[in-house]
Image 1 (cartoon, helix red, strand yellow):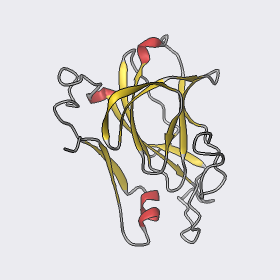
Image 2 (image 1 turned 120 degrees about the horizontal axis):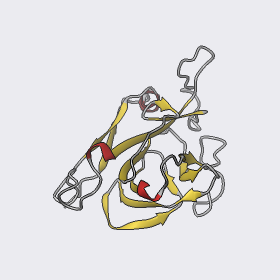
Image 3 (image 1 turned 90 degrees about the vertical axis):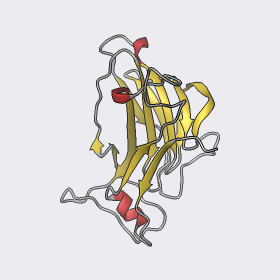
Image 4 (image 1 turned 90 degrees about the horizontal axis):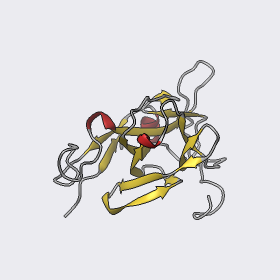
Length: 191
């Protein structure tokens, strides 16, 4: 049987899907079952409620008037020069010293992402991956330092912030080199 997973929805109007997703016509919905219950006291006891945070990662471009800009005639794939999380440019989140679940969605039109959890000194810290768009993994992938996300791909991760001193600043950073919409440089194993 199918396992519940982090899902997303977006517009599929013929010839306008990419433009409409770029304009914000997309969102996430979360599915639960007896293992992934949405309650920290039952099932696998995964972080839930205020500690289960969906993150839609997108790139956008603005014109000279500060309006969203998109070239529908460029069929090589749109790349923006601003990065947004849930529609906000460079948002921040204050967390408590505990585990959080983040549901990452690459909502970009053509941009591949290589996400890292980075300290102020630039060192990438490990992240535990617990699920994909196919649902929970049979076992977590522990201590991942790069999360590769193709457009529309989802990953659920758990980060334990109790390992950091209060006041520690961390960044979720994309380190993928992708100069055009046809794909990133490098190879699949070494993007």
